[in-house]
Image 1 (cartoon, rainbow, N blue to C red):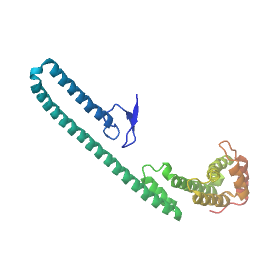
Image 2 (image 1 turned 135 degrees about the horizontal axis):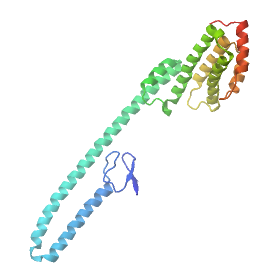
Image 3 (image 1 turned 180 degrees about the vertical axis):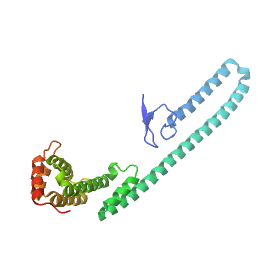
Length: 256
C-alpha cells in the first residue's frame, strides 16, 4: 500500500483515500482523477450515441450534456464543502495548538521565576496543575522538585532518628543511608552529564542541605558522606557506617 504525506497535518495515509483521516483535508489527486474519470465516461457515452443512433444523436447529446452539467455542479459543490470542512478542522486544530503553546509558555515563565527564587514548593504546586508536566519540556522543574520533595522526606527521617534512635537498629540506619546516598549519587550523575536541563542551582542547594542534615542529625563527616556517595549502587552495604553512627549516638546525642 503506497502512502502519501498530508500537506496540512503531516499525517501518513493511503494515497488512494479521498481525504486525510487525521485532519479531513481533500486528497486533490484523487479528486482530480474522479473528475477526469467522469469526463472520460461522458465522452464514451457521446461516442456510443453517435455510433448507434445517428438520427437522434443531437437530442441525446443535449440530454447527456444537461445531466453531466448537473452532476458536475453537484460534484464541485461537494468538493467545495469538503475543502471548507477540512479547512475548518485544520483551523480548529491550529487554534487549539496555538492556545496550548501559549499556556505552555506562560507555565514555563512562572516555573522559571519560581526556580530563580528557589521556591520549590510553588514549583510543585504548579506542576500538579499541568497535565503533561512529566514531558521533556518540564524536565528541569520536575527534577528540581523531586529532589526537593525527597529531601524533605529524608530530613524528617533524620530528625526522627534523633528522637527514636534507641529503637532503631544498625540495619535500620544502613537502609536509611542507602536512600540518602542514592539521592546524592543521582545529583552527582546529573553533574557528570553537565546538567543538560539547567538544573544545576537546584542540585547545589539540595546537595548542601543533605550534607548539613547528615552532619547535624546523623553525625557523619564530610569525608564519610563523600565516600558513601561514591560507593553507592543498588547493592551497597552501609552497615559498617551505620554501626559507627550508632556508637556516636551513644556518646554524643545530636540536637534536633
